[in-house]
Image (cartoon, rainbow, N blue to C red; front, top):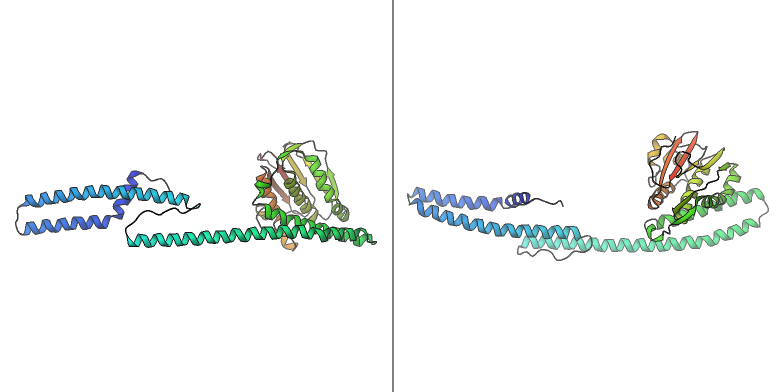
Amino acid sequence: MQKESIFFMIFSYFKERIKIICTFFIFISIFLVVYLLYHLPLEPVLYASLLTITLGFLFSLYDFYRFYNKHRFLKYIFNTVEDKLEKMPENNKLIEEDYQEIIKKIYNSKSDLEYKINNNRSEMIDYYTMWVHQIKTPISALHMILQSMDSCENKKLMNQEVFKIEQYVEMVLHYLRLESMSSDLRLEEYNLQNILHQVVKKHALMFINKKIKLDLEEIDYRVITDEKWLTFVLEQILSNALKYTKEGTIFIYMDKQNKDTLIIKDTGIGIEEEDIPRVFEKGFTGYNGRMNKKSTGIGLYLCKNILNNLSHKIFITSKVGKGTMVAIDFLRKKIEIE
């Protein structure tokens, strides 16, 4: 509701009472016509009309005062109804009482529905959090089995698949925690080079299996961020680069023009131009995702939201057949990527 002027309130009042006002003046006109038809003295008619109009005006002022206060009270309820529904305005009309009962019933139904939804979501988060921790046990067991295997080729392939399982598990966990991310943040100053080394080391097997080169420049940059969440973002970006790069090199460096911007550039298949504006949408897979039917369309959506919560910003440019460049701006400046 917008703030209304007194003129708007007066107009609204007369608009709402127009039938009563018209009826009032019709009755006065009837009395006036009857007196004229019987040739009665005009003075008593005018005097009675003046008294009636004066009393009607005074009653209208009182009625307008109640109308205005009731409107203000309803505005207050409108602004606070999200938290709780306090007592409704007093009324002595059956229809208004019926409306109030309907509103109360709708509000109670809404409150019950919200409680059920929140309860179900809480149970779902608890279940999947437990599931994530439970599934880590067979993953660890698989790692131990792989270490005892003789065939190097099979071992490499199985290690790669186990690594993918771990990534999907981490994605589920971060997706569930995204809404409550603010309560899980621990902002400190970190050396970006150390975080990148962790991420690259975790993906070393993928680099080796796919025979893709890595060009990681020496980065002397400190950033105020949350290490766990930023690490997840960098892992997602590097994982996408590896997934869609068949051969060539992945470059990681700080941009020369924008000293606060990290660049991760690959020589992969690239992204269709019409898909780029939508790559951060939840569930959007684009042309590449349709070609790779295992794509979920969740990774970049999570990256965008996490970086927004960390007060960082992400940009993507790409050319089909030439590769993709992802830029993370740690100071949220508007940057242009060539």
